[in-house]
Amino acid sequence: MMLEIKEVTKYYGNHLALEKFSTTIRSGEIVGLIGKNGSGKTTLMNCLVNHIHFTSGQILIDGKNLMENKSLISRFGVLIESSFLDYMSAYDNLKLLLELEQKQDKRKADQQLSEILKLVGLYERRKERVKNYSFGMKQRLGLAQALLNHKPLLILDEPLVGLDVMGRELVKEIIRNKARNEECAVIFSDHNLNEVKDICDRIIYLDNGTKMYDGVFEDHKKYAVTPERLDKELLAHAATIGEHVLAEPDILMLDSIAELNSVLQILVRKNISVKELEVIEGSLIRLFKGDMNNADHANDMQNRIPKTFTS
Amino acid sequence: MPTMQTICKIEFRKLLHRKDLWLILSMLAIPALYSIGIYTHSSVITFNGTDKEYAMSFFVNMFHFVYALYIYFFVLSLISVRSLGGEIENRNILLYTQRINERKKLYQAKVTALTAMVLGVSAVFFVFSMLMFYLFAVHRTDLISSRFMVSNEFLSLILWFLSIVLAYILTIHFSLMLSTFLKFNTAVIIFILVLIASAFMSKFPIVSFLSIHYYIEQFGALDLSDSGGALRLFGINLAVVFLYSLVCKQVGVRRFERRDL
Figure 1 (cartoon, rainbow over the protein chains, first blue to last red):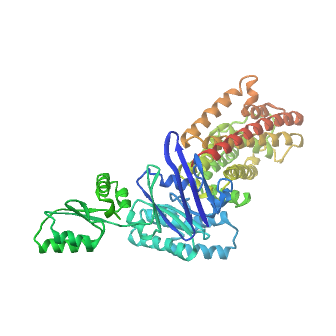
Figure 2 (figure 1 turned 180 degrees about the vertical axis):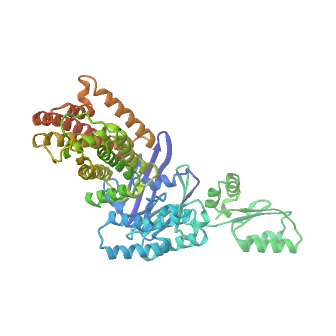
């Protein structure tokens, strides 16, 4: 299955919630959506499942326009804001959804429901009314709803929120298995970059409705070392470890911790003290942290590196 | 894609799970209190009729009594608004819109389930009224006849009963429509205001034809043996309710389809 999102824009009145968002998601791929509150993550997901109507753009499933073939939406397993009939049990909630989706004989339905409830760890308390559930249990039930009937695309809005460590690991494992073993495409959002990078093949970063980053997670840090002075040995060593060392006359820009260690060894041996050491994080992390000063500084640094030295 | 039958079944089951359905069944207290009151010669119960009451007239009079209390219009409006507007507000609707991709179908299923509920409650009311009538009221032979019906009045009584049922069905349509674009409380308040306005309208010439209350009140003043007159009155009532319901449904579906959830 292939999901193509083409220049989807959504306005709420005059407020631009999502601006010309485009991406493609394929079977077996796990895509993480990150961004601050109000960045457009949930808006995008709601557009995908037709909960809200987007202002312009196109969404295609295997080349078919989703808005002209709305029945395709039922191929999505969706968790956007866990919602339940809290006066019913977890089992009855799931049974009701199963009935809506397809006719099944009672034994098969019961088997599927039991499997899913076991998978999300709610089997023992399946007969309890949902209103007695904790937030984390409701979150698991929401995931169970999305997993019903083995959908080829899972859309999960913050599925890890409210879960304890064990719960988070369990959900991540389920998502991984769905993608790897069932070739399920997964798009899921979270505020926590560390959680997302753990399981995603690709990360999309949204800020104020605009896509700022779409690619694999790269944790590429740079280390800017400013020694008290630079001598010939240091410069010669710097020349041997990379092509990108001298950012400014007195700053060594190093690409890895190993490079940093080798330079520090020379500095210690030569009794040269370090005036300043700065860790410059990769672009995604800089964006995510919204640390604009750092980002500006890093960009500034990159700009100051002579072209022949930049990677 | 689930069938209409499946969606209706699920909507109906959801209604049964809700407590507010049981609130509407409190209307059963009216025939119970009335028949027991007659039986025990209670001073609270007054009887003004010239002819003896029989089973069918007792049932329709009780049903009209319940209608005249107006409280059940309010309760039914609450149930209807909760069925759609409540689900939109608490986001439970999202569970279904993703699986029932045609919102129109979901809207129609809610109308059908609520209408089935009203018909079911009316049927229960009939059975319960009969039970109360033959258990208690029938013993007051000075006021009550044990006959089930008087043949030349039967059609008029049935049409009178149906015109009240139509008013309840219109309540469902109107409340559901309001709930597609108003908040829960606002929708119920608007419904009450319109209900009061409609009751007032029924007292004024010409505009009274636009009020569904007018037709129900006219049945009360009608000679029940005049089946032709009853049929004419019901025909117009049916046409008015059909027209109102159609408008409500069209607006409701359109608003529901176009709104962001």
